[in-house]
Image 1 (tube, one colour):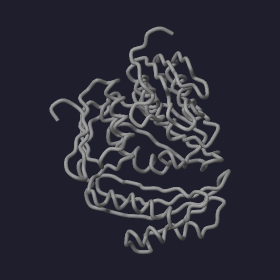
Image 2 (cartoon, helix red, strand yellow):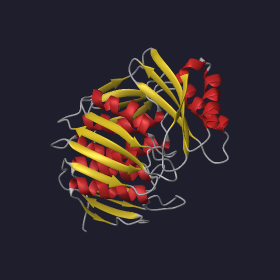
Image 3 (cartoon, rainbow, N blue to C red):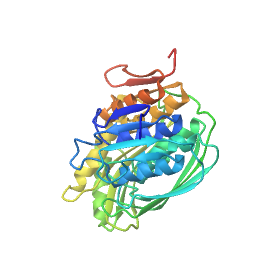
Image 4 (cartoon, rainbow, N blue to C red):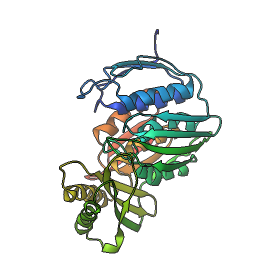
Length: 344
């Protein structure tokens, strides 16, 4: 297909699908073409899997891109974007692959499009290897609204791993330019909640999860709840939701075969405790997603936990596409500062 603007190594940093998703999103925004080689080369199943392929095809449809290498298992992809077109789109992962990760891929482009878009995404909504729908709706999207972007998301059907079958509907009202964000403190805790969700499984699993979390966090019993939901296949997760003056954070752990409910609850509690003790507003998963929009805004700052390899990888891809000052530096033993823009 000829020369491209950027060549990316798919083994960069953590070497997963995040490199591809971020590259697709920023290619749509900037109009810069790219080639990515050795996609997920170090993974047990290397190359494009179903949810990655869905993300590629979704991005290509939204911006009328020319694509080469968009087949299952491919470790090489060329993507040449056209103009982003607002509209109504429906994308189906076809497995329990994450609908949220497909949304993350196309959202940067549609956030800056020329009209309102509505998406229907079918597949996994609650997957242990991706942010669950609850996180998108309660943590991530409210912060984007503070940056001027109106995005509303609704869960129409739960989809757990491995059966999938979930469905979300998203409405995006774009903004001409994103506003900068300053998120250095979380403020007072206003509310905390422990909950567990089960589908086609005994409710005692959820009972044990929330009780384990409650004991580890030292909270009262009235802060817990259990929800039984319908889904195509069985599924379970436990969550801790903490609402503060400046933001809400959510920490989840998923039930798995042969993993005791107490261990699932303990993992959710561990994540929450780490965040509470660090006294930073932005958790590690939120940091992954926010730095893209901070960079697109061209200015802003937030405090977060020490970055994961996922975050560091994302940072490098964003720098390659946007070329703006974007820094992630330690502030103290527990907190790091992410800054975008000159003079910060």
